[in-house]
Amino acid sequence: MTHAAPTAAAPSVATDDLDAPSRTDSLTGLLQRDALLDALSRRCVTGPGGGTPFALLALDLDRFKAVNDTLGHPVGDALLRAVGRRIRGAIRGGDLAGRIGGDEFAILLPQLTAEAEATALAARLVELLARPFLLDGHSVVTGCSVGIAVFPTDAQEADALLRCADLALYQAKAEGRGDQRRFQPVLRARAEERRRMEADLRAAIGLGQFELHYQPHVDLGTGALAGFEALLRWRHPQRGLVPPGEFVPLAEEIGLIVPIGEWVLRTACREAAGWPDASLGVSVNVSAPQLARRDLAAQVRAALAASGLAPHRLELEVTETALLHDASTALATCEELRALGVRISLDDFGTGYSSLTQLRSFPLDRVKIDRSFVSDVATRAESAAIVRAVAGLGASLGLRTTAEGVETAAQLDQLVANGCTDAQGFLFSRPVPAAEVLALIARSKRQDAAAQGRISA
Image (cartoon, rainbow, N blue to C red; front, side):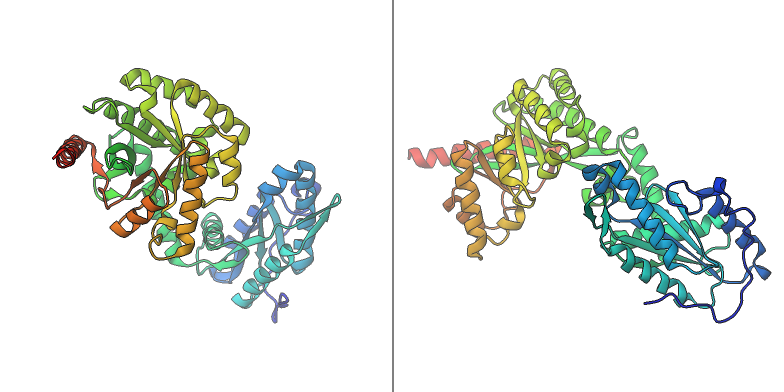
C-alpha cells in the first residue's frame, strides 16, 4: 500500500531551523525529540480555527532489545540508522519524522486530507520495517508497531495528542505487535483505570491490604497432607478481593514485584512457623526479578531466622522464564539456597522451551506439572503420556512430581497410575485464608486417623 499524496494544499508547519544539525538526531538523521515536539506544539496552536486535521504516528520497534542483547550495541545502532533511512523513504516531503528516544519514533503528517492517509502510511511502515536488515554480516528481523492519533478529534494539545498516539501504540503491541492501531476513547479510559490501580497498588503494602491464602498439596502415596502453597491475594477496600492475574502483571511491569515478593516470603515463613505440624512445608513463588537479585539468599536467610521456620520446610517455586532471565545468576542463587537447606521446585513444567536443560542444570527438588496437561489427563492419551513421561523422568532424577489443578477423581486416578508423587487442586481444597489453615490441618489429621483405624480393623 502506498502513502497517498494530498489532493489539496494544506497549511504547512513552520520548520524554522528544524534541519539544523543541532535539531537532528546524530544517529538516525531524523529530528530530535524536542524539535519534533516543538513542531507538533506549533501545529496545535496555529491550525486555522484550531480545527485543521493532522495526524501523529507513534512507532516502536518490536524486538530491538533482543538485537542489542544478542548482537551488541554497534549492531543495534546500525539497525536504528537503517530504520531511519526506511522511515525517510516512506514519508512525503512535508511530513516530519523524529526519534523520540531509544527505539521509539514519531511522525507528524501536517497535510492530512483524509485519515486513510495516516493508516496507509502506518501500514507501509509496518511492511517496510518487517523486511530483514543486513547489518555487519547479520540478517536482522525486527518489525514495528504503530499507533495513530488525529488532531483535533482525539486531542487538541501536543502532549495529549502524543499520549493518544502512545496509547494506540501500546494497544497494537498488546494485541500481538507488528500492526497498527487507531486511537479510541476507550483506551484513555483504560489508561486512567490503570493509573488508579497503579496508585492503589503502590500503597497496598503500607496499608496492609495484601494477604496470603494457602492451597494444600497431598502425598499420593499416603494420601496425607504434605504441605501448602502460599498464594497472594489483594483485598482492596472498594474492589474487594482482586485476583492475582489482574495485579501481578502490573506489579511486575512497574517494579513492585520485588518488594511484594519479599513481603510474601516473610509472611509465609512467619505463618507456617505457627502451624502445629512441623512436618508440613510451605512453598512460595519467586519471580524472575527476585531470582535475578544477588541478595535473594540473604533475604531468605533473614526470613527464616525471624520466623524460626526450619529451612527444609520452605520451598521456593521458580519458573523456566525466571531461570532463563539471567541463567548464571539464577544458578548461583539456587545453589546458595540449597546450601541453606531450602528446597527448590520448577513450576509450570512443560510450558517453556528448555525444560530438560533446566532439570539437568539446576539443583531442583520438585517438578510441578502444569494444569494444562492435568485438565485432560483422563480424556486424552497424549496428555496422559506427557504426565507419565514427566513423572518417570522426575523419578529417575530423584525429583518429586506435583500435578497442579486436579479437580476430578478421574484425573486423580490417572495421575496415580502414571506415577505422580503429589497433587494439588480443588479436588482436595480451594486456597483458604491463613485463619482457616489450622482447621484444615486438624480435619486432615482426623481423616488420616480414621483411615488408619479402618486399616487396623
